[in-house]
Amino acid sequence: QVQLVESGGGSVQAGGSLSLSCAASGSIFSINAMGWYRQAPGKQRELVARITSDGSTNYADSVKGRFTISRDNAKNTVYLQMNSLQPEDTAVYYCNLEGRRRIYTVPEDYWGQGTQVRVSS
Image 1: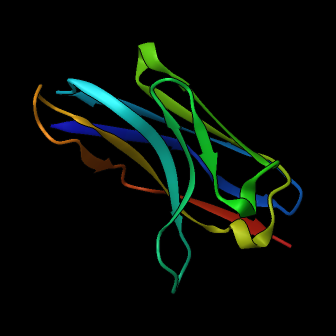
Image 2: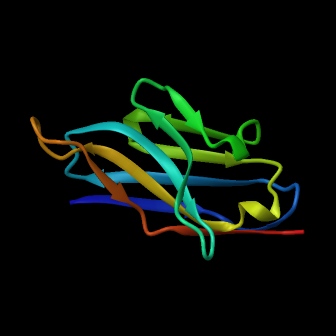
Image 3: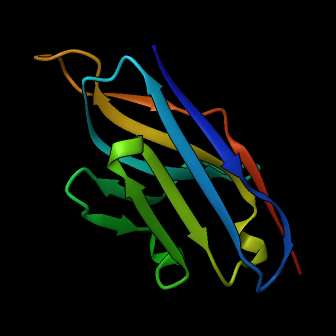
């Protein structure tokens, strides 16, 4: 099994900052990428930021310049620093890991339990 344990999140006023972290553990052979997705009430889950094993990153247009994703490969941990938060950033944020549990298998997606971020105006 692969476990993703998220921490961080909470409530903040607009313009404030929060940070999230997600540590992966369990039976992991290799990790292609880790990232963060979010889902607001009544909306579909969307990509926020993603970082590959070689450090390549991509961000949703709505968070570029405000959010920064980083990763500690030795700890299998991914971080998301969120600055200049706005009410529209309010959502449940989910950690994602794309990887293999065994060699010669197709990469699969694994998800954390989600952490709530609330931004008030």
